[in-house]
Length: 302
Ligand SMILES: N[C@@H](CCC[C@H](N)C(=O)O)C(=O)O
Image 1 (spheres, rainbow, N blue to C red):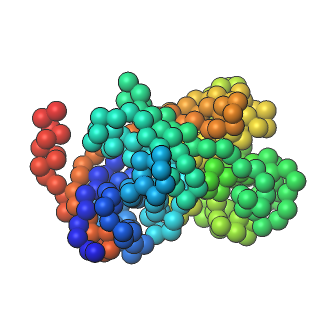
Image 2 (image 1 turned 45 degrees about the vertical axis):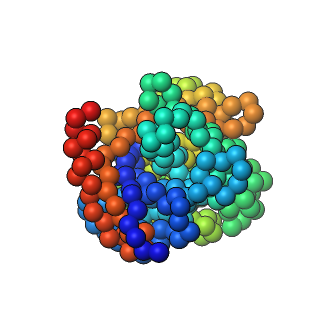
C-alpha cells in the first residue's frame, strides 16, 4: 500500500500537528515519512496523529502518535484535541472515544468550540514513569542542572501521563530560562531510561500557573498538552495549587491557556482549543505530499 491519504495541518495552542487519515488501511505512517515531513518547512510538525480503524468495541478510532524525529509517543494532548475537531467537523458528532498505546481516552467538543480530553490517570510509581533509580517519593526527585551549590533547575516532580514527564518549579517566567540548552541534557539524562518531556512551571496563584516545555522527540515546542496535565497534577500533588488550574502556556501564540482538572476520580481532564490550517494528501510510506487548494478555497468562503 503506498497510495496517498488525506491529512490536515492543524495546531493546538501552536503545537504543530499533522492529522493523517489512515482509516481503511492496514499500514502505518512510517518513521521515514515522519522525518521527511518534519524536514520540509511547509509541513514541519511536532506530532503526527494517525487515525486508524478502531481495534476494540466501543472506540471510534485507534490513534498512532509519532514525534517529528520518527519516535512513537504514548500521549499527545494537543494532538488529541486536533483529532476531535477534525472528526467532529467530518461527522457532526461531539463526543469520541479513542484508543492509544497508553489506553482509552474520552473526548468532547463543547458549544464554544473548545475541546475536553480525559487524559486518564497520572502514574507516580518510579518504575512506571519510568525512572532508572528507585524513588519512594517521585514528587521531588534528585536531579539538577547548574553549579552543585547554586543549581539553575533542581528537584523536579516526575510522573507519567502515559508518557514520561519531569516538572521543574521555577520562580520567574519560564521564557527567561535557556530551555534550548537545558532541555536536551534533561530529556536524555540517564535517570530517564525512556527519555522525558521537560517542563518549567511557575506558580502564579492557587489556581494559575505558567509553563514552557522541551518535548521528548520534538524539542522546543510552542505548547504541550500532556505536559500541562503533568504540571497541573504535580502542582496539586505537592500542595502548590488546587486540583483545577488554568495554565498559561508561555511559548504559545498570545500565551494561550489550557484548563487542567485533576478530578476526584483521579482522571485528568484537559480543556483547550484546536485549529485547522490546511489540508492535503500524503504518502504514509515516504512522506511525499501535496496541498489541497480546493479545501483552502472552501475554507476562505466560510
Ligand atoms: N505535544 C504533545 C506531547 C507529545 C509527545 C511527547 N513529545 C512524547 O514523546 O512523550 C502533547 O500535547 O501532549
